[in-house]
Image 1 (cartoon, one colour):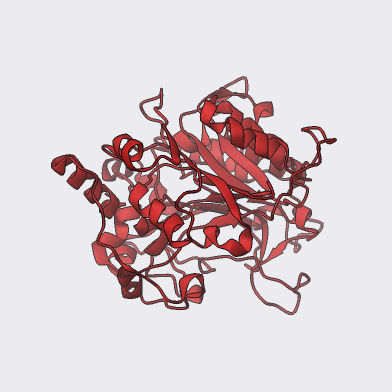
Image 2 (cartoon, rainbow, N blue to C red):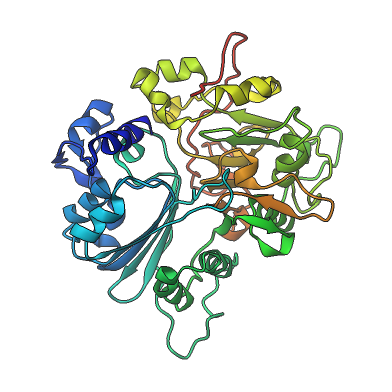
Length: 454
């Protein structure tokens, strides 16, 4: 992020759209096996999501926070897609971006989302790719659309299966996912009330999402109630209450729900309040600890841990202090909530060789006491903050949320599994492992550790 902001500031001072030095395209493209970070400084890697093996692209929509239009257009150009219609909806105002697009990019339609709430941001990261046969794919990710996010940091990305066009005889309600993804996704797109989104809403409305097995989770600015599915607190709590199954405690020795720990992991942390009970446990844990036998508990005794890089994690990262460019946690905020230190764990991902690359991914899950199974996994743009998740809960159950956020919730039920397996064991029933990035057991902060702050 710091490199992105530096280019943005350079643009402000020079008065023209700044461009990064041109790099050669990696000869291995999306099949690149290299892990050395210096390789990614030397070579561009074409966007895999534009690979023709996924379909012949007709047009696309990018919904995001930060967009480096020069870098983004290069990804399309590398695939021979420079003339394909592109729509972007973005939240961070790059100087002269509109003038650049108007002058040089007739195929690009754009809209800057100006937030009514001064503390809210347009933070969702979604792509919709429409193909010549009018099928589509949806992408939900944690990455902004600029070079560093796609080359230097750990990110999470969900790519939908191809969703074919429904026949003309079908209604809009047909082609629904078993999870209700289509309805919730359409509600999110419609909430913008933006004319430039109408063609994509029509494509989604006419698409068959029956092969999609994840739930769509969103936050939409405003005050909302549970049934609207418009805040992370409401939607996650409701979905887990209906579909998350945990083992019942039948004997003193057997594992029960409270033996499964909740883990939160994000790239920034907001103002959580004067103590853990105020929002961290009183709202977000209330949602994340929900399950079919205990929906939205008023006061959960479940354990919750927070994975966030320490100063030492960042300083020993690939790029030293620059590794912390994607971790915009305020030191002033941290000083007001030193109680959070009791919940913090280091960023360690040795199993995948990713410890030295800092996490811009945001994820939330519930892990078995044997550390081999997940009861659910949430991948989202939402950092651990009230602005992103909403809250705290009001007396009538409503929640106010400030920012646009989007994620996907994986529940074993919809994958015909009891739990997601994350480690190979003799008891593995699924035959496949769920991709889980960081190491378990977690590594606690040392007494002299301090969370990385900008």
